Amino acid sequence: MYSPTDLKKGAVIQVDGQPYKVIEYSQKVMGRGGSIVNVKIKNLINGAVLPKTYKGQEKIEVAEVTNQTVQYLYNDGLDAFFMNPTSFEQFQLALADAEDVPKYIKEGEEVQLQFFGDRVINVELPTSVALAVEYTENVVKGDTTSSVQKDAKLKTGVTVKVPAFIKTGDVLKIDTRDGSYIERTK
Image (cartoon, rainbow, N blue to C red; front, side, top):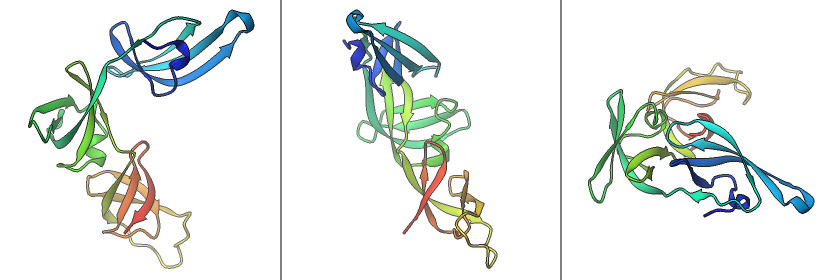
């Protein structure tokens, strides 16, 4: 059980039988009255965000969420399919719940699946991935300042904004949280 002051950003709790992740946390100390903790929590199953207030000595149930390293196999347009590389157990998750997986993860690469009980509830992507540029326009001579951006289509099919000096075939480090270019890798 958590006390309200344990609800730091990233903590996973259970409310009404559903797993929630704390996404915002603030605490107000009220002199002799104790403290009040205001949090925003995100439902890990349906994505709903709720504000919640906890007082003093309330007890909050910890959600039993487990992680498992799996291999991304493929997607069929509706679902994404994963496999545990040691037990060969397969899992499927609706593509609506795993929409970023085909954008940034190549077939055969490993990701983390989160489970609540026996149910797959989320895919944890690495914060950055290295992807090769499949196609981008050639730079115009004299137009090579770093502030000029152009589109680059990556091997997974996603298009990102990159600096003008990037060429087809370059390998780029991409932030999976917002799809932005970080740097060119060797």
